[in-house]
Length: 410
Image (cartoon, rainbow, N blue to C red; front, side, top):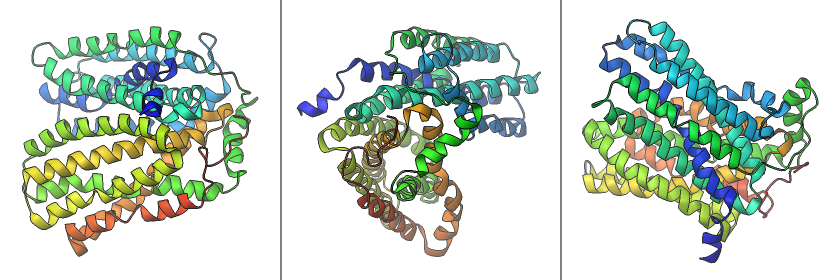
């Protein structure tokens, strides 16, 4: 147990909880929470639907990540400077959102929401790069787990918390309160340790090309990329189809929401923290094997539901166990992505790798409905249990050390 608790003791790991909170807070302020505000004041549902397009910056953040590698903001240092700037920008942007009437001027609200989403995606880029640069190998998983813990707490505050407050306070006041929560993050960013300075790309061209050249010049780079793309593939597809599956079993939306939010949130959060400590005990490669296999195997809970039918007890167990194991797998996997990044351009490489990790799920996942239609839900979740096998085979081909691919320049 000593290795488990030791992984959480450093200042670097502790401060990442607050930085994770700052990173997660604005996510739903241009998404679910904003949609709730617009719905309650009578904005047309078509307009609300169109406004979901403002979340696109999260999918394309790798396009401007090289700029954050190339240039350093003058204050606080290369990574903390950009974090502080985006945090201040988010305070101003969310405050601006609060001043807009979404029913009278939906176009102005779209501009405000797009600004929040772009600044939030930028903060994510530099937060990921900061975490990659500041954490030594033995703290990557624990640092990631505390960051994700803070991130998820923030989403709860700005999501369900803001929704509850809106029953007692006007929506603009709720948004201003959330905006004010961004300000303590600036002080914490100033207090946080700055990563050791590394050589940065000297030109814009180098900032866009060197991250690719660096990654693909390494031994087994294609095997690593294949593993990154496939590790979460089965879990991604199963998760996306879980709600239609439960509706098909005649669970009410209230039942699904209550069990998913309460049990799922708690189990996932516990899993991330548990995984962060266990990686320090078992090592990164062994943890990737163990947690990946467990995460895939726990789809058996949904398979059992498909066979047995509607059961609240079985659903609670399936959600709890699966989210616990998926959280542990997330902690190990994000630590693995960090180990692949060269600190000279970690913002770009992490953004690209994290995008690659969902590419297979987003594209091949489109066929999931056809699989269900052809074979039924039991066959679908049975297949999902084995979708992790190709990734685990690729993992077995990588060197048995903490950093599966040595990173030049780290």
